[in-house]
Image (cartoon, rainbow, N blue to C red; front, side, top):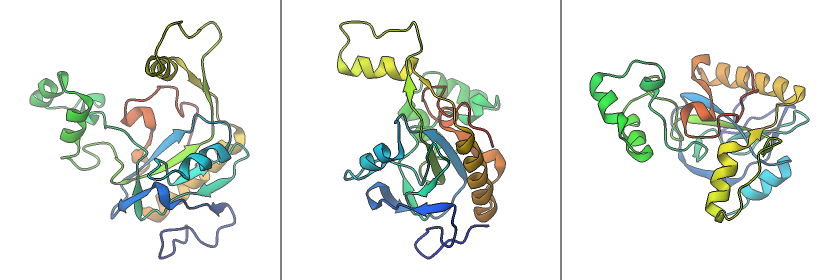
Length: 215
Protein backbone atom coordinates (compact mmCIF):
# COMPACT_ATOMS: atom_id res chain seq x y z
CA UNK A 1 0.00 0.00 0.00
CA UNK A 2 1.24 3.49 -0.84
CA UNK A 3 1.86 6.15 1.80
CA UNK A 4 0.17 9.37 0.59
CA UNK A 5 1.17 12.60 2.32
CA UNK A 6 -1.00 15.65 2.97
CA UNK A 7 -0.13 17.07 -0.46
CA UNK A 8 -1.35 13.97 -2.29
CA UNK A 9 2.16 12.77 -3.09
CA UNK A 10 3.57 9.28 -2.57
CA UNK A 11 6.20 9.37 0.16
CA UNK A 12 8.78 6.90 1.41
CA UNK A 13 8.69 4.77 -1.73
CA UNK A 14 11.98 4.17 -3.54
CA UNK A 15 10.18 3.03 -6.71
CA UNK A 16 8.25 6.29 -7.26
CA UNK A 17 10.12 9.56 -7.86
CA UNK A 18 8.64 12.98 -7.08
CA UNK A 19 8.51 15.16 -10.23
CA UNK A 20 5.46 17.27 -9.45
CA UNK A 21 4.35 19.91 -11.99
CA UNK A 22 1.77 22.30 -10.55
CA UNK A 23 1.22 23.60 -14.10
CA UNK A 24 -0.79 20.47 -15.00
CA UNK A 25 -2.90 20.47 -11.83
CA UNK A 26 -6.42 21.83 -11.79
CA UNK A 27 -9.21 21.81 -9.19
CA UNK A 28 -9.52 19.51 -6.19
CA UNK A 29 -10.35 15.87 -6.94
CA UNK A 30 -12.42 14.58 -4.06
CA UNK A 31 -12.99 11.05 -5.33
CA UNK A 32 -10.96 8.66 -7.48
CA UNK A 33 -13.12 6.21 -9.39
CA UNK A 34 -10.61 4.78 -11.87
CA UNK A 35 -7.29 4.86 -13.68
CA UNK A 36 -6.70 5.74 -17.34
CA UNK A 37 -3.57 4.41 -19.09
CA UNK A 38 -1.98 6.52 -21.83
CA UNK A 39 1.10 6.65 -24.05
CA UNK A 40 2.88 9.96 -24.50
CA UNK A 41 3.63 10.01 -28.22
CA UNK A 42 7.10 11.28 -27.28
CA UNK A 43 10.50 9.53 -27.21
CA UNK A 44 11.63 10.28 -23.64
CA UNK A 45 10.29 11.29 -20.26
CA UNK A 46 12.19 14.59 -20.52
CA UNK A 47 10.29 15.62 -23.64
CA UNK A 48 7.06 15.12 -21.71
CA UNK A 49 8.41 16.97 -18.67
CA UNK A 50 9.29 19.90 -20.93
CA UNK A 51 5.70 20.06 -22.19
CA UNK A 52 4.42 19.99 -18.60
CA UNK A 53 6.37 23.16 -17.80
CA UNK A 54 4.08 25.27 -19.99
CA UNK A 55 1.39 27.26 -18.20
CA UNK A 56 -1.93 25.39 -18.02
CA UNK A 57 -0.42 22.32 -19.67
CA UNK A 58 -2.32 19.07 -19.90
CA UNK A 59 -0.84 15.99 -18.28
CA UNK A 60 -1.33 12.94 -16.08
CA UNK A 61 -0.55 12.05 -12.48
CA UNK A 62 2.19 9.50 -13.18
CA UNK A 63 4.70 8.82 -15.95
CA UNK A 64 6.63 5.62 -16.66
CA UNK A 65 9.93 5.82 -18.55
CA UNK A 66 11.24 3.16 -20.90
CA UNK A 67 13.56 1.85 -18.21
CA UNK A 68 10.60 1.36 -15.87
CA UNK A 69 11.24 4.48 -13.78
CA UNK A 70 8.00 5.76 -12.23
CA UNK A 71 7.52 9.50 -11.69
CA UNK A 72 4.63 11.15 -9.88
CA UNK A 73 3.94 14.33 -11.80
CA UNK A 74 0.78 15.58 -10.05
CA UNK A 75 -0.97 15.29 -6.71
CA UNK A 76 -3.64 12.60 -6.56
CA UNK A 77 -5.78 15.17 -4.74
CA UNK A 78 -5.91 17.38 -7.87
CA UNK A 79 -7.55 16.67 -11.18
CA UNK A 80 -5.54 16.91 -14.39
CA UNK A 81 -6.69 17.11 -17.99
CA UNK A 82 -5.68 13.75 -19.45
CA UNK A 83 -8.99 12.44 -20.87
CA UNK A 84 -11.03 14.00 -23.67
CA UNK A 85 -14.82 13.87 -24.10
CA UNK A 86 -16.14 10.54 -22.85
CA UNK A 87 -17.63 7.87 -25.06
CA UNK A 88 -20.97 6.42 -24.01
CA UNK A 89 -20.14 3.41 -21.85
CA UNK A 90 -23.59 1.94 -22.21
CA UNK A 91 -23.08 1.73 -25.99
CA UNK A 92 -19.84 -0.20 -25.60
CA UNK A 93 -21.43 -2.51 -23.03
CA UNK A 94 -24.72 -2.90 -24.93
CA UNK A 95 -26.89 -1.67 -22.09
CA UNK A 96 -28.18 1.71 -23.25
CA UNK A 97 -31.86 2.38 -22.90
CA UNK A 98 -33.80 2.81 -26.17
CA UNK A 99 -33.95 6.56 -25.49
CA UNK A 100 -30.18 6.72 -25.03
CA UNK A 101 -29.57 4.80 -28.25
CA UNK A 102 -31.61 7.41 -30.12
CA UNK A 103 -29.96 10.29 -28.25
CA UNK A 104 -26.41 9.08 -28.84
CA UNK A 105 -26.91 8.12 -32.48
CA UNK A 106 -26.54 11.71 -33.65
CA UNK A 107 -24.81 13.23 -30.62
CA UNK A 108 -21.61 15.22 -31.01
CA UNK A 109 -18.68 14.27 -28.77
CA UNK A 110 -19.42 17.28 -26.56
CA UNK A 111 -23.11 16.41 -26.24
CA UNK A 112 -22.34 12.76 -25.49
CA UNK A 113 -19.79 13.76 -22.86
CA UNK A 114 -22.25 16.08 -21.15
CA UNK A 115 -24.88 13.34 -21.02
CA UNK A 116 -22.38 10.83 -19.67
CA UNK A 117 -21.21 13.20 -16.94
CA UNK A 118 -24.74 13.21 -15.52
CA UNK A 119 -24.03 9.60 -14.49
CA UNK A 120 -21.60 8.14 -11.98
CA UNK A 121 -19.04 5.36 -12.38
CA UNK A 122 -19.66 2.53 -13.28
CA UNK A 123 -22.58 3.96 -15.22
CA UNK A 124 -20.01 5.96 -17.18
CA UNK A 125 -16.27 5.78 -17.70
CA UNK A 126 -13.96 7.59 -15.26
CA UNK A 127 -13.22 11.14 -16.41
CA UNK A 128 -10.82 13.97 -15.66
CA UNK A 129 -12.97 14.73 -12.64
CA UNK A 130 -12.42 11.38 -10.93
CA UNK A 131 -9.54 9.43 -12.43
CA UNK A 132 -5.79 9.02 -12.07
CA UNK A 133 -3.86 9.25 -15.35
CA UNK A 134 -0.76 7.18 -16.07
CA UNK A 135 1.40 8.16 -19.05
CA UNK A 136 3.84 5.64 -20.53
CA UNK A 137 6.68 6.93 -22.70
CA UNK A 138 6.17 5.68 -26.25
CA UNK A 139 6.20 7.04 -29.78
CA UNK A 140 3.54 6.70 -32.46
CA UNK A 141 4.69 6.52 -36.07
CA UNK A 142 3.24 5.69 -39.46
CA UNK A 143 3.76 2.01 -40.33
CA UNK A 144 5.78 1.02 -43.43
CA UNK A 145 3.91 1.60 -46.65
CA UNK A 146 1.72 4.42 -45.35
CA UNK A 147 2.86 7.89 -46.37
CA UNK A 148 1.47 11.30 -45.61
CA UNK A 149 -0.50 12.56 -48.63
CA UNK A 150 0.85 15.73 -50.22
CA UNK A 151 -0.94 19.04 -49.97
CA UNK A 152 -2.50 18.57 -46.51
CA UNK A 153 -2.84 21.49 -44.13
CA UNK A 154 -1.12 21.27 -40.75
CA UNK A 155 -4.43 20.35 -39.13
CA UNK A 156 -5.05 17.64 -41.73
CA UNK A 157 -1.52 16.31 -41.25
CA UNK A 158 -2.07 16.02 -37.51
CA UNK A 159 -5.38 14.24 -38.10
CA UNK A 160 -3.81 11.82 -40.60
CA UNK A 161 -0.93 11.08 -38.23
CA UNK A 162 -3.31 10.62 -35.30
CA UNK A 163 -5.58 8.24 -37.19
CA UNK A 164 -2.93 6.14 -38.91
CA UNK A 165 0.08 6.07 -36.61
CA UNK A 166 0.83 3.01 -34.50
CA UNK A 167 2.17 3.27 -30.95
CA UNK A 168 5.27 1.27 -30.09
CA UNK A 169 5.01 -1.67 -27.72
CA UNK A 170 5.78 -1.19 -24.04
CA UNK A 171 9.16 -2.42 -22.87
CA UNK A 172 9.31 -5.24 -20.33
CA UNK A 173 10.46 -2.73 -17.72
CA UNK A 174 7.39 -0.58 -18.43
CA UNK A 175 5.04 -3.56 -18.14
CA UNK A 176 6.44 -4.50 -14.73
CA UNK A 177 6.31 -0.89 -13.49
CA UNK A 178 2.75 -0.39 -14.76
CA UNK A 179 1.50 -3.54 -13.05
CA UNK A 180 3.16 -2.51 -9.80
CA UNK A 181 1.75 1.02 -9.93
CA UNK A 182 -1.78 -0.06 -10.80
CA UNK A 183 -1.83 -2.69 -8.07
CA UNK A 184 -0.62 -0.18 -5.50
CA UNK A 185 -3.07 2.54 -6.56
CA UNK A 186 -5.98 0.10 -6.65
CA UNK A 187 -5.23 -1.12 -3.13
CA UNK A 188 -4.48 2.30 -1.66
CA UNK A 189 -7.40 4.17 -3.23
CA UNK A 190 -9.82 1.21 -3.28
CA UNK A 191 -10.23 1.29 -7.05
CA UNK A 192 -11.94 -1.67 -8.69
CA UNK A 193 -9.80 -3.40 -11.33
CA UNK A 194 -12.83 -3.10 -13.64
CA UNK A 195 -12.20 0.66 -13.65
CA UNK A 196 -8.70 0.51 -15.15
CA UNK A 197 -9.02 1.56 -18.80
CA UNK A 198 -6.89 2.42 -21.81
CA UNK A 199 -7.36 5.93 -23.15
CA UNK A 200 -8.99 4.84 -26.46
CA UNK A 201 -11.59 2.86 -24.52
CA UNK A 202 -13.01 5.91 -22.78
CA UNK A 203 -12.39 8.67 -25.31
CA UNK A 204 -11.82 9.18 -29.04
CA UNK A 205 -8.13 8.38 -29.43
CA UNK A 206 -5.88 6.32 -31.68
CA UNK A 207 -6.90 2.72 -30.97
CA UNK A 208 -3.27 1.55 -30.70
CA UNK A 209 -2.48 3.83 -27.74
CA UNK A 210 -1.48 1.63 -24.80
CA UNK A 211 -2.81 -1.41 -26.68
CA UNK A 212 0.16 -3.51 -25.52
CA UNK A 213 -0.16 -2.46 -21.86
CA UNK A 214 -1.17 -5.26 -19.49
CA UNK A 215 -2.10 -5.35 -15.84
